Amino acid sequence: SEKTLKIKMDYIHNNPVKAGLVENITDWNYSSARNYYLDDDSVLRVDRII
Image 1: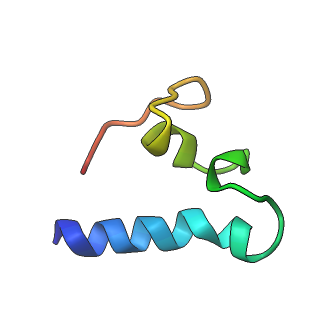
Image 2: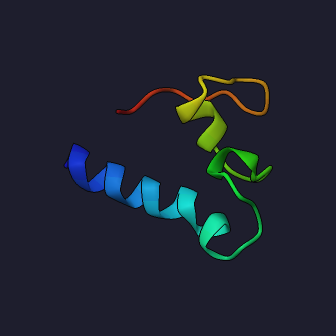
Image 3: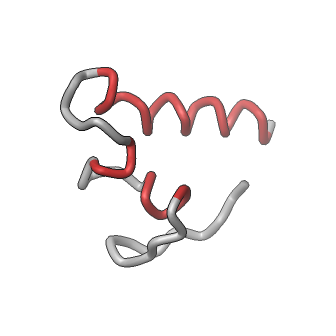
């Protein structure tokens, strides 16, 4: 379901923060978080699924 997908994406995006590698989920270079939360397509193009 859409709710389950969002939960899983949030979990994945938060892993670098929980590991102490970055302070903000959008700071992790190897994440699509910037694309979803900041509407930034500079790193990679993301088709919205939510």
